[in-house]
Length: 118
Image (cartoon, rainbow, N blue to C red; front, top):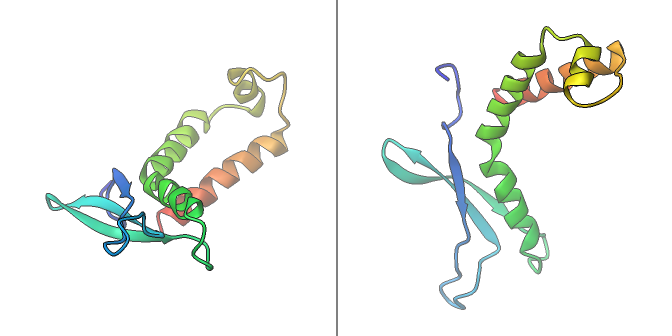
């Protein structure tokens, strides 16, 4: 997308190793191809007490998925923009959805897109 201010996806993450202990470090690098070179564009860290690596990995996975999540949110909003809440509900295998709930879903998607594209 030409108006995107963020590094274009796809992004990936890697688990670095502590050179002194050869164990996984508690921070995780998030990488993207920048002009043909793999560059660290962000890092995710674990718990403040540095005893639990799982949150850093989970944070990195979520961050690395951000470009795809933003695109998917835009695509969903585009696909269902003109549908009534009832049409949308039926397309999702649900019996019904109120107009208000449909608008709340659209508003959450708009807010996520705005936040992700800021």
